[in-house]
Length: 206
Image (tube, rainbow, N blue to C red; front, side, top):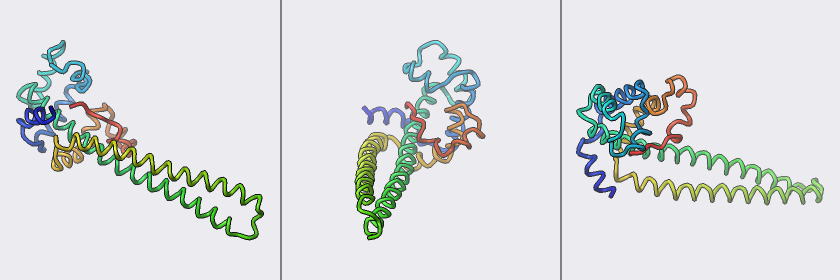
């Protein structure tokens, strides 16, 4: 199914700056018309419901030949965006996981130093051993969560990966601020304020 879908969508050629600029312009026009295209497309996958003429007019104003061409470009943008999102999300999660494990290990090391101190009473050490046990369990849980999340992310990237390529993913990352703006309706200032949470928060339907 994915192979057939990819073959149909690929008829518009690879994403490039010209396509991205037309896509962003069109999405802005659609939003100005009060149309959230991603939501409309999910509700009307065949494009035959009320509002179609208004949408196609906006698409042509944005520079696309017709609705079908725009939908194909939209799919390619969505695939590249979701792949970029997975890459960025996993990189941030990897950093967070490592930081959490490092902090937990620091706590364990500190307790080990206290346990080795002959001046600390045995009853205090008994409590420290319980705390160390909890920290060791916490560290193991952090590692397990990372492993589970990575399995899911690897699967998602395996599914989306064949539908896009590194060049298109890099292009979508280049236009991330503009895409965030047209996808969310937020201003550039608002997006800048939450930029560290940007790409991992959106999942697009092709």
